[in-house]
Image (cartoon, rainbow, N blue to C red; front, side, top):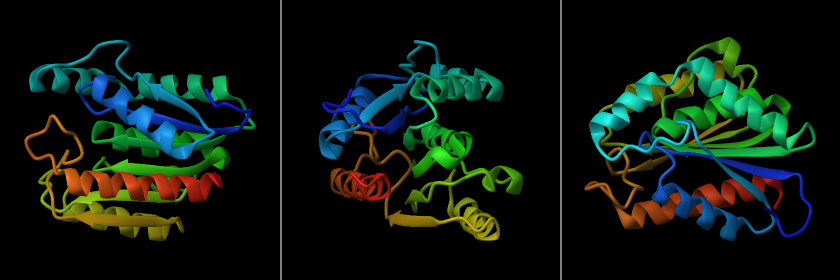
Amino acid sequence: EAQKHTNNYVFVIHEWWGLNGYIKQETEKIYKELGNVNIIALDMYDKKIATTRDSAGKYMNSLKTERGEAIIKGVLTYVGSKANIATIGWCFGGGWSLQASILAGKQGKACVMYYGMPEEKQEKLKELNAPVLFVFAEKDQWINKDVVGKFETNMKTANKTLEVKKYDADHAFANPSNPKYNKEFADNAMKNAISFIKKELKQ
């Protein structure tokens, strides 16, 4: 909760592992850096946390789109129609960060996606109000150059704002528990994310 009343909210969306300690730490960090905001870490897995790649994959694949959207809509109802909303997420949560910003419509002010799956449908992208900062890991085999290039084209067609920050790193490089973790890049990406959210929320 913010110290003083504010209509600025940040939704934080976890990786495919679930709402674990790492995400709670990142949420804390974002809250401290941004100052007076309300910050909500969404739990897309209904309290389930994965500890193996197998279970993470299982949880991720068993989340139906309707359920994910219902969770986000519930949080949107909770924050109310006056809220200004920024969203941030990693990997699985990167894709959902964009979906949350789309669902937020005019209330969406900033969207940060770390190596998440972009939306391709024009009718959905047209509902997006928030500018997007995309953190791109250039060695990522999954969210690769083609995926990001297509996203850039689709966003241009939809007349939306997209900024891509490139890092010479692999997928999930921002997570300290990942063998591909790169502290320097992770710190830099977070710094960019914070200043982007600050600017768009006018913090």
